[in-house]
Image (cartoon, rainbow, N blue to C red; front, side, top):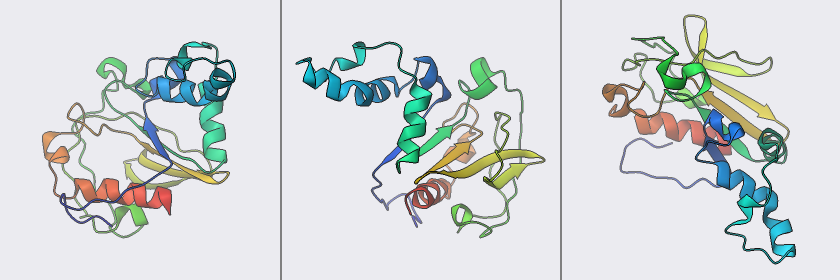
Length: 186
């Protein structure tokens, strides 16, 4: 468990990105296409650094599904430009979150009261998932398992669009993310 900003732990085999990755406008688009086309590109003598241009019709959601099923861990972080929050249209503002500390591993060492969140995306938890944090009836963190891998969805932002400056600068912010990653990789 990380208890301060000075500590660090390295995790392998974790992918975290935006919902837009499936639509081709993501920070992970190259990663997903690169993995899908690498063997074919090398077999054809193509440059692996540009093989993401080989195919435009790859079903990235199926790649993510296979990645998790085979033991990869995948997280989706919401925010201003994801889920239905595109262009800030989520419209859930001024959220005060209270948790039951130690009710789940991802909450270990966190205080009951969290700093305010300026907005979030409305999520629906699938059957069989765990919702350790919610606001009213809305899941804020959803944890799941699929095949050999694990997944999480974080309904709000991790940066100062919907995550308030108080949330981003919160002394427990690294503990929260350290706990989420530790759970994903255990």
